[in-house]
Image (cartoon, rainbow, N blue to C red):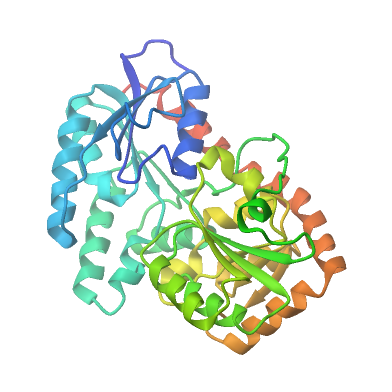
Length: 383
C-alpha cells in the first residue's frame, strides 16, 4: 500500500465493544496485519481494565450514554463524531449504522475515505417490526449516508441484494462472519467439566446472547420434552434470568445449563467440546431471514453439526453444505423431535461434522480478503 501515510491510516468505530466482538476483532486484525495504523473508537470498560487484544491497534474507549430510541442515537452520534473528528486519518470505517453519520463527518473534515460495514439490515430489525415510522427513519438515514460511502460491506447475499435495490447503490461486497485464521481448533472438555455432564450425554450448545426472537424460549420448551440430550446456553442477555427460572420451575436443571460468555479468542476450543451447535433465529423480521450470524460459522470452524432455524440464508448454507438439520422454531413438537432424532444418530452427526472442513475453506475466502482488497484500492488513491 502507499507508504505516504498520515499518523493514522484507519479510524475504526463501533458501538459494540470491539474487544469482545468477533467480527470487529477479525477486521481490526486484518487491517493491522497489512501494516495499517488503526485507531479503534468504541464503547466499553476503560482500556486499562480491558486492553486491546490487537496490540498494534490504538484503542479509544468512550463512555456509553444512557437512554434509548432517537435520543440515544443522537447522543451516540455526538460522542463518536467528537472522537472521530479529532483524528486525521486516510479512511474512516463505520462498523454499523449507528456510527456511520459521525464517521462521514470526520471523513469530510479530513478528506478521508468512508467505509461502511452494514452488519445488520437496520430498517428491518425486530425493534422496527410494527413501527413504520421507526423503519422509515432508519431506512432514510442509511439511504443518505450509504450513497456517500467509498466502500460498503455486509454479512450475507440477501442483505447485499436488499441494500442495492432499496438504496440504488452498487451491490455491497460480502464479508462473511467466518473465522479467517487457519489454525486448527483444539477442543477440550470445558463444557462437560463446567456442567458436570457425562461423556455419553449428547450436548447441544447455544452460544451468544439470550434475547427475544432468538428461539431461546422455544429451545427450553423443546428440551423439557427430551430426556436423552442436554442444552447448554453459553452467554448472557436479558432473557437469561427468566429462562433460568423456567428451568428451575420445570425441574430440568440437570439437562439445561447456563454458562457465562468466554472471551472471543477462547471461544472456539470451548465450542468444539459440544456435540451440536444451535442457531435458532425466529422469523420476526427481514433481518433474521437474511442473517448469517457469527455463531453459524463458529460452529463450522469448531467442526460441529448444526441445528438451525429455517431462515432463508441459514437454511441455504446448512442444506447445501449438508451440515445438519433445519426446523421451524415456532413448531415446538417438530423442534423437540429433531433434537431427539439428532441425539439418536451418531453416524449422521459424524457425517455432518466431516462436511464442516470443506465448508470452512470456502467460507474463509470471504472473511477478510474482500476487506483488505478494498482498502488496497481505496488507500492507493489520493483523497
